[in-house]
Length: 126
Image (cartoon, rainbow, N blue to C red):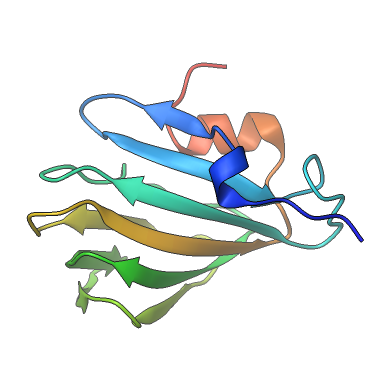
């Protein structure tokens, strides 16, 4: 058994204009997963993720706390705790924090991200 805890994962701190923290919890590098990437994202008040897509990865989002809007291609949906959204490969998606507290959600991605792909898709320096 391989175990980790979110509190022990520093994560990637992404600055303006997309202030957020992405923690890589279950990945090929952290837990040795072969077909899945699971992480959490916390978006600061007044911020959002960058609008992006993944060519071959499908992604499921689960809202844990806070509120906002989730966009997948031309559709928008209210983003509140308990909401689950699927983004098929190739769809542009973005999450916007419209609340007054940090917005936290879980992301599940298959196949798992490669390091360089993750950094490029999320507009991070390599």
